[in-house]
Image 1 (cartoon, one colour):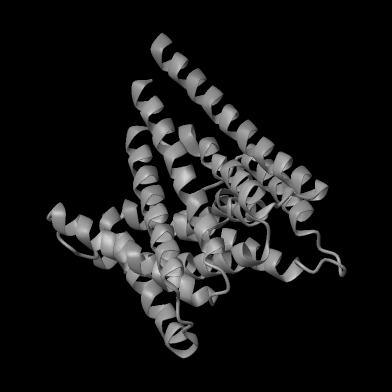
Image 2: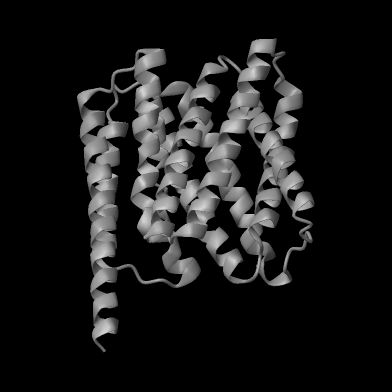
Length: 295
């Protein structure tokens, strides 16, 4: 239980870190999406390389998981770019919630990639989560935010697919620092040509803000990695959604963003589904533990 409490504390810190990352990305102002993505990943790359040097880890990509790491980098990078695009054009709460659909996309992608058969609860939860997403996206011809919302939805898909390939690569022996370095380097290389072509000079304030975005992301990344060392994902996943609550607060306090009613309905559906799925998983684990103890 003590380990689980530490895991919850770490994942709450991660939620604060990632919510501040989205806040600083928005606060940076009218900079190209690719420029923001480059600097966010450049800072992450420096921190990841520094970590592997300090821990004296050997940088090695196992041959049997190179494609897994490639697809982790591809979907992770395109998902990140899509998320940043949505952050600049939607309310912080909406963009964060669409990105938090990633676990439900992961359930779907795990079927062909990891050969995992989802339970009826997982299938039902995924369907309800996407119904909740429709309330946020509001797919009508009059909705001026439809395209950014769909791109934000892809951000959640990219993140969820990337998680599946991370699990696949990790199961084949790839180490976390190596995966992080590959992802950060791939992201920088992919966004660098766009940065060169459409670079917009940044003021000192914007440089500081982008550094803060990178640091916030690093805090989130290290905290969430540490959280999963203390407790498994199934025990912590629901607390990750606190990021949406924090993002809603930052949007309300600093940008005067008040979510519309349909978005609030979407939040309630998705958060409710995530909570029920988490609670059911915990109950099933407890029953299994009791059966083992009695036997």
